[in-house]
Length: 229
Image (cartoon, rainbow, N blue to C red; front, side, top):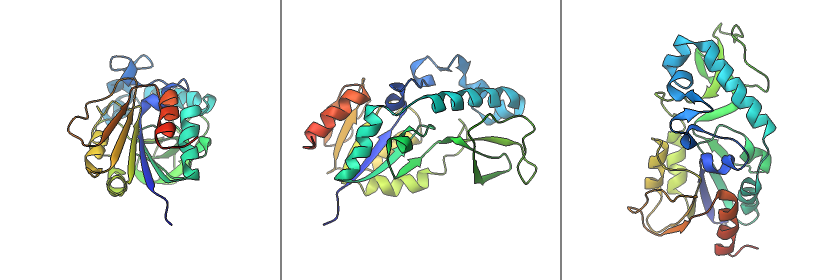
């Protein structure tokens, strides 16, 4: 008998409890930086050194962070369910927690690519320096989707959402598009568990079960509702 398919959409809230902050929590600032200055193609053209410095710091933060109990609880769902994670986060905490199917909508901080070729990726665990170039002569940049750039993984994410037997939203305000629109592709008859300290606007959706808690506490409650120990 095939396992039920759980699709989990995660955002900043699940990694916040591992100590990783994002602009969501700080009035448009990300670790003290205006996102327009460090997370747009315009910023890259204007001051690539600043952008590299910013993402080098974020990579170091991610490498020092550890998966929390929410990441681990999501991974443990695989014992009973076919679990697909779609994350807005650029960290690798889901993978380190043991999840085996993770789609990163906005890229991965532990990968880099040439500024000239977006599909050829390279692992990176150290700082990227200005002057580090790829085989094609292009400067290496973080493999992240900046604001004002298209989100190519949306095309893969939409059919996954539509295939969900159970949907779980963890730690996202549904304020960043196009990722926020993914919830619209979950079928009406599917139960939608929403875990967040502040439940986002989801009144247009049917079968919503709000769990107004931080991710770590919310995953305990989700497992109870799913009948897991």
